[in-house]
Image (cartoon, rainbow, N blue to C red; front, top):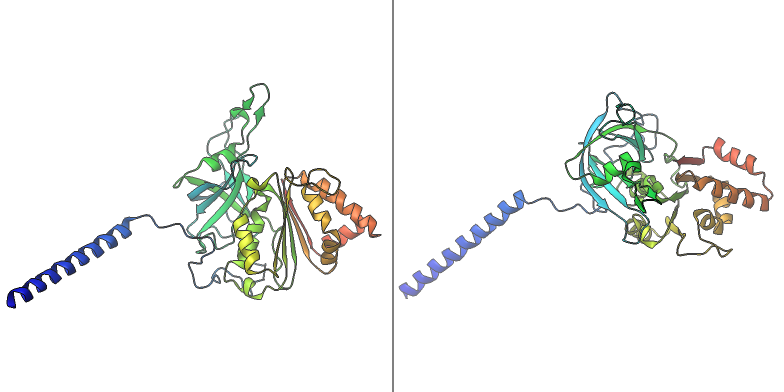
Length: 355
């Protein structure tokens, strides 16, 4: 009947109007809602090829010390996140800084940070602190507009107070770990060429040895080679072998990313951890980084003999143990350690950045 038809038409119009209003409301809400966090492994560009040299492995135009103490760059914090578990020794944070694409750098370089305030002893500005950059040149969201740091909060335990002494805490590390979104960070650099990847030969093996936050440059390497659609990633045929030494499983850094890279590229990515409070070395003592590398000494020496590059990054206290271990292995192989090391340095296969 006409009445029932008219009723159905009116009902349909009401449903359509309601749906339209709901869609408009959702669209409006989406416009003002904060953007969801970009997954580290998801690219926001079709390719990461817009910050490359020509050819991509040419290192002649690497930016160095673009920003200096008297003319620094000011970035803004995007996020600061604790990235270790509750049983970790100390607190380590991952800090993403928005640079609007104006702070260019390459993987393996360091960023200078000038903490706010002045020194108590003379009222002068604080000195620059250097931190290895923990992202590729494209940043965590792969837009080329951010850079990231991996920072452990430096504290001093006072045995008399039986507590941390705030007067002796690390000025810059505490400033960075306490930052919140929108806070400004005064930056210098980028600094250094010691830890760069030589990308001209895509079959080059990289042996990356780190303790703690010394993992930072290697995260940049691994993201460039295995997560991003870069010319370097497309060409890479070698093996990236990561050794990381930390106290326990809760102190592992970026393990989810490294395991994802290994899962996707099992022939090109390798991971070995030294967990000093959870593992034992072959002598029954604590498993330190040099002990883990020693387990694979024959393979490491063979790779180096075939042109691999080896990198060391972390606390300077790591190097004596590593060098003693390498010296012992060299002696077992009938090699003159000093000559062997000199050869690696001459061929630029030996990279050290410790602090």
